[in-house]
Image (cartoon, rainbow, N blue to C red; front, side, top):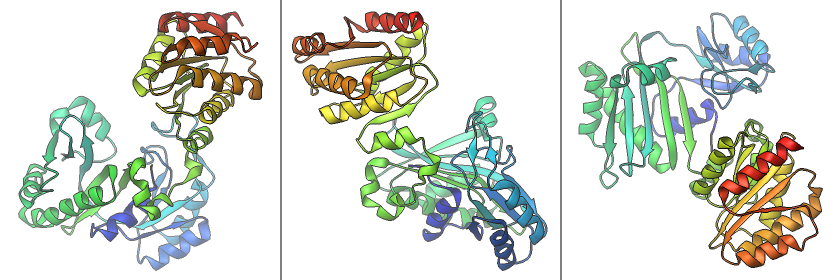
Length: 388
């Protein structure tokens, strides 16, 4: 789950992490009033969407007067902000963060993430922080360094000092960096984050370290332990079909292709998407129904796929282990009857109760094409879509 910048900063503030004073607003008059409350300018006016690159897209402005704060807010709210992370469709701005400005002397990058290769939380940092960190990673990766943290010990003061010295901090800033980095790690662990990114971490002209921007993602599987964090979810920032899928414990991600996919298992789903591409078409979605889906979940999965207007054909690719092929077949038939499938449908079943599953499909009276193997299934659905 993702949250907005202002929400992330509120969480970090509770863990003793230094962040600028600011307030989220929903109209231009409130923006001007809050700017005055925050003290003398300048102020930063920052569009709040779930995407990076806002500065380059025009979603971050520096205002020198309260009236400028009002005008920038008026311009941002209601605009469609396009960045390299939103795609060409962009995201609608519905709220803005008004924040006290600061005099920046230098910028750095710090993030915590789960490194699955080491099974540890890893601190990633660079002295080249700011809007172009992606270019740094691509062109000069040697400027980014990593520090793995032992989960049984946590982040030690020694590791924090080591990172601070690598960032080139003077002794006064090293003294600030140690508790700052340790508090960030504590926030990451206690809030069950999957990513905590500070970009930039700034050194102000008066020698203070400040987290000027913050991005936090959370482990969805741990949200039951954090009800207040769960309530921060902004459904306006998510795809409606993905929201619907989550209600039935379906893993769904919308894509730009024309062939809908329903698969059990993430690995099989990725392979299915690849082989569709190989045969000359593109997947319309990633959809994993899981290993123990019920007929109801399969039916809902079908409805979600068919609600995408781009879908011109559907490929169901199931390996029956825990999930039996006859359950999938029954779900496919039920969904097809309820929704009224008007596009080509190819089903490949393999595994437990496969013969029974194929019999259910054959006797359904519906126009369902059975396939033997992934290659056969992909080839049949691509041909059917192109012929339609």
